[in-house]
Length: 289
Ligand code: PDD
Image (cartoon, rainbow, N blue to C red):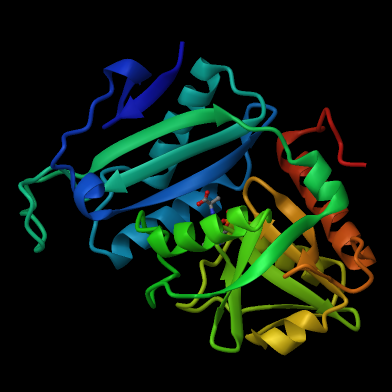
């Protein structure tokens, strides 16, 4: 059976119903998280749930649970659904209320939904790399909020899909920001460069893990905006994200990145990232290499 959480209750998926006037449905008025599950355990759960609390606070939604309470509920769901390798998705909207732009009163409680899904590690892409296009970043100016409003991301990702690619690398004018659903880093002369965590990008938890690994292993890195020229001249390009961990980009706009194969720094970070997963969640059955 497929169980979900609806407003704190564990229900069979078919019995979980959300009102047509839920503000998430009508306005995208809510926030969400996607957390990885390895060996039935959540990876970097606290970091994700803390970011959820922050996203909610930034849009004035008060979550009715503490981080630890949420984590316990998600762990119960994972165990009930017997998910070994996958993701848990959770979202809070501002609740059900007749359509009106201004927020409803405090008597309207947020709607909380969570479900799990079995998702493999993208082994082939991790090994061989992904192809990407570049696309103007037309999103709003608060990309630090993990908002349900993803139309700008979806439009860019659809363009990539239509071009036979896996990801759209977004740029505001000449400045590269992030991927449509990933963070991007380049490697030049042994230095990892990724956009600083400001309002133009989502401060990815995988990005933060990757930067922590750089620090711990004396890998030089810079958190700063970089240009399309720097992207095109990079030795290596890689993406980070919850479902993909660290994935090389080997082709951008049909041109090879560097020599067109995953680079040594990307390989090193992939392997360090994997060690981090093993440390937190135990041995992985299917290792990348
Ligand atoms: N996407 N940037 C954007 C715009 C994202 O949507 C995501 C995650 C990331 C990477 O963040 P993290 O490392 O915390 O997953 C960066 C999720 C997985 C999604 O929307 O499915």
